[in-house]
Length: 101
Image 1 (cartoon, helix red, strand yellow):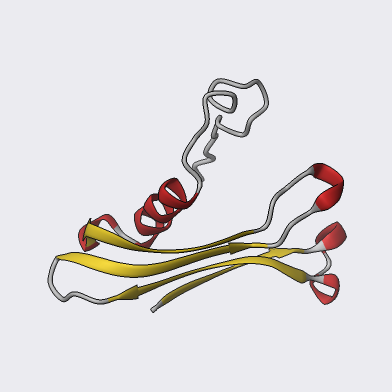
Image 2 (spheres, rainbow, N blue to C red; image 1 turned 60 degrees about the vertical axis):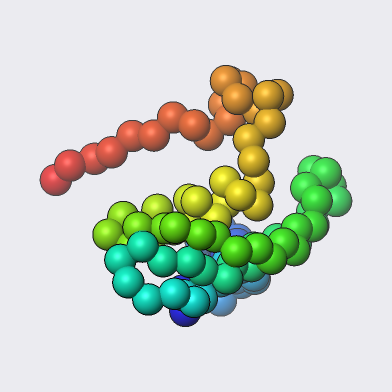
């Protein structure tokens, strides 16, 4: 089972961390192409209007060669499908940069 914990570390301080969400994905079919029982949870944050989420679903036909991050991405796309208002919104966090060392 893959477990992803989502935490806030105020001011980068681990001793102040608290959990705001979790994603679990349990493999229920063997082989390269697999299915997973998935649960996506998020705590509500009322001051910003962030809703609580608690969704369970079956993610089918995932190619395990794509890796764990692709599984997480696919789970989030099912649990939180993009809305028209969030696509192309400035500052929506869709831009990525990488640093090669």
